[in-house]
Image 1 (cartoon, rainbow, N blue to C red):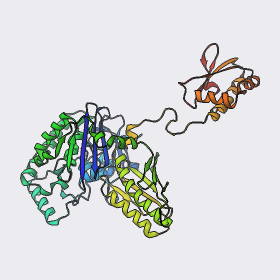
Image 2: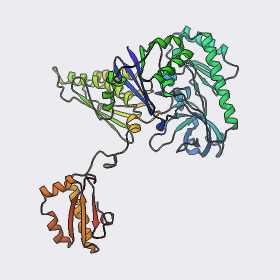
Image 3: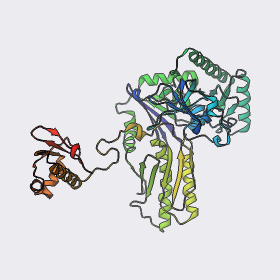
Length: 529
């Protein structure tokens, strides 16, 4: 599979696009005003201990207190064969570390099998606690943190509070695994903690291993020194930049090329590679053409589509992706595709296409949490299994942990995807002030009826004599064309002198009532449903 990484940088924004076989599969965006937190290490203060939910809230200086669960106070039992953190977690800012990878988001495997400590015995209100962010603040929730701190390097992840040397599951050769584990175990300082050997370390040399162990161990000693003198809440260690994180965690000999459109970022990449993997420098190219890098690869058009619910499928079917508070729903439709064979074959082909595109869209939009996919109903159990297998195969390319359950009798597949940060839809858009996020506004005729009821209430209270009503031009046009006698009839019924004015500054389903001649807004006083 052909893999490319494109990095487009400007002073106020860095964007990273990951392409597989010339198709965009991941987009990572970093801005100074919305800096990523995953991987940052803090000395916090315990704000509250909640034994009822086996958790505590820790003040790390963020807008909201961080959530610390009892399961994140202890070492995971599954460290012998840990998943490589960069395969676990979509951490484009370099937050792909042992803590974020093994314990982040929707809960790690093995949590239910571990005996959890009593959080009230471990933590007290006002206590200083060293923690690391494993999940960004999302919606009304603050960040999630772990006490199992980890420091990621190019080849190794260091976990000071763990105790074992593990090898990434993606290194499958048993002899190679044993060789790497023995080499690292021999080099690490005695009782220094736990270490994970990452996937990219398959050809790790003793010299490179020793250099990285020394670097990470020294970094940890520096963090401990800062913690001993810091006054909480305090930031002790900031995770590396988006660009460096991508190079460290993703750029390997399995990536064909890395293109950068900024000279400054290009120099940063080259200098960093000189330290960690000089052989890869020849794959780094500076894009100097007049057309922008993302335009040249047609990325901008793809980015625009990310915020549209409808996703077209190659043969004419389509998906509708709808995020809600509780989950994300994805509906599959055949659209204009009718097929040439029997209906079951047509549906199967559409569903298989949809399964591939669903897996891609989840990565691309960075959708996490609970996802329900409503595939088109199929009669054959075998066909349902084919669709599920196709979905699972393509989800296997995802760096975030995913789990897809069997197809239900209604044709639904329920699944989960690890959520480390808000989706692109949440992080790059704001709630519409007109519809308050519903995507719907009242029709002109409904606005007129609401206005009519408000004016009748004002007339019944006999406090006003003259009212000017301001409406959106489209609603005013509806009155002129559809109800030309509305105003005259309403004046007779209410005894009010009424004047209607169109105002392009009004929202489509809004109206304002202003008492004349004082100019006092009385809309809320006479508001009705």
